[in-house]
Image (tube, rainbow, N blue to C red; front, side, top):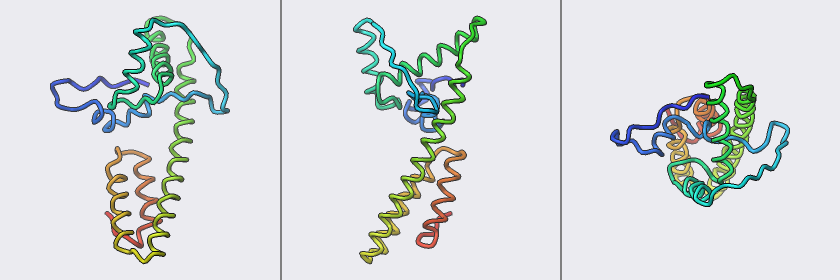
Length: 173
């Protein structure tokens, strides 16, 4: 897991845009549990300023962190990788990275199914109400979001599933 350099401040690219364009959410989000749901609580003392800075980072709209613990897990994983690069310290960072891929894939798959099932429910309600025009507008708004996703496996899956479920209602590229 290597992180690309941050955007040049003079480039005019916001941190949010930088993250969205590169799907860095996958890089930033380190799961709290392993693939079996196991985890351990870890507490430590830190200077008050460090804790306040964690809260600032979490509130920053351009970063995908939801909780201070996500920042700490990400920082630890990155530090383990750095330790491997400067010294032959045995770490489990590759194991953690592999586990992250599995868990994130499971999360993406679950979100994928929930999103399409909810969309299908809404389409059925609208169609039963006789709102064909509203249904098409609703689906086109969803398609715009799907089409705006970063290139990759999940965008392909979303587009394919959208066309399979709703291609008979709206014509999309």
